[in-house]
Amino acid sequence: MGKVEDAVKEIAEEISQEIQRELEWLRDSSGRPILATVEERLQTIDDLFRRRLLGGASRVLGNGYRGSQILCECKQWMKYMDDRERTILTILGPLTLRRSYYWCEACHASRVPLDEELGIVGEGQSHGVQMATALLCALLPNEKAMQVFEELHVPHVSEKESQRVTLAVGQRAMAEYEAEAKRFAEDHVAPSTDVRAHVPERLAVLMDGTTVHTDGSSHEAKVGAFYAFDGEGEATGQKTYVTGFRGVEDFRDLWDAEAQRWHLADVPNLAALCDGAAWTWRTVEDRCPPHTVQILDFYHGTEHLGDLAKTIWGEGSVKVKPWVEAQETRLLEGREDDFFQELRNWTTEGHWEAEGKKQLAYFEANRDRIHYKDYLARGYPIGSGVVESACKVIVGLREKQPGMRWRTDTAEAIAHLRAVYYSGRWPALRRRLSRHCKF
Ligand SMILES: [Zn+2]
Image 1: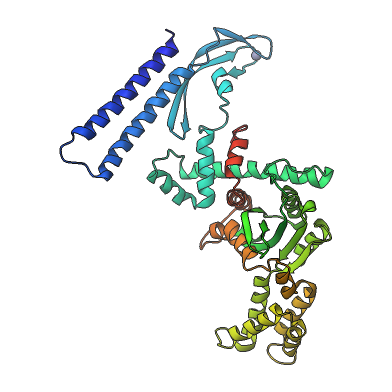
Image 2: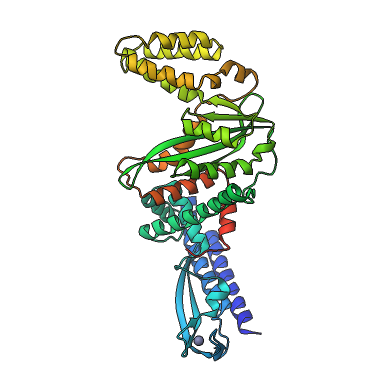
């Protein structure tokens, strides 16, 4: 039997003995142990198995020895020097490898064939550890993420290293989407990753922005959301998101690429819901087909009405809510003339004048996007916070917490990872990135 076969047999026997011993302990222990005790005891056995398995893997993988010398790129001979130990943190725990090291006296190059075979590059963590780190740190503040790893007995890097890994993974993931956006913008090549399997019958496309304090000043994170909806305007299935801390032009390309993943041009019923910012409507007009129905997100409209009401009667006044609701009703019932007449009433002289004119201008600019009665009758969504909650889910909940300070690149990388995760695309990203795990 070869050395490797011996090692495999030895380890398998050891592990099977451990299992037997543990089950016998369960059978023989005087007085039945409570489940928590059983769980705790089996956990320590699990840790032991992992160590045995990793030790076994290290023996089976060998050292990558290729003889006393190998040919160098410079055509001279590289000499075998010695075996060098290196420990890589894997999702099962530390894997220590003894790797044969070769050195070329002529050009001072070195090679470690085993590292090349196993695709070990960069820092001392496996792909599994890096992706788990990036996911948890995208979802939680780093310090909390470390606590979760501890609690779940998942081997993990230090808090400081987790920041580096998360940024690297986030930037790598972002670079993929950027490259696809650029290819589509410049050469009209449709994206090939994360493409939806079917053309939806009805699709809602959304855009919004939210301000985050990064690099010492305010930066706008832009967020796009996409979802299919049913005949009642209700979202069905997976929503997807794109985000970027960048100017309108760059963001539009990212948004556009995402729209292609949903086969935008072939969707029969398209609704674009936006908050009223000019850049969002320009994007819809430039990038969406002519049959797209533009809808001012009802939630944002309501917010604007609230601002006016608070100016008129004061924050917290009992008159605010009934007035806003009365205007909402007018819009939902299609009484748009009454609605505008009411707004005009508040553009007369008075402490409300400036705010009244501002909000009248806002709704006039969106005059053709507030036919809510008609939209509802046709089964389109009118927005009830999906646009707003996209900003919260992708950016706000993680990045707009008290006392947080961000670098723009980190904030963007983390927001992107959240967008990937909340779009149901994390497993696909993990698989794609395993091909180049140099972080
Ligand atoms: Zn050489």
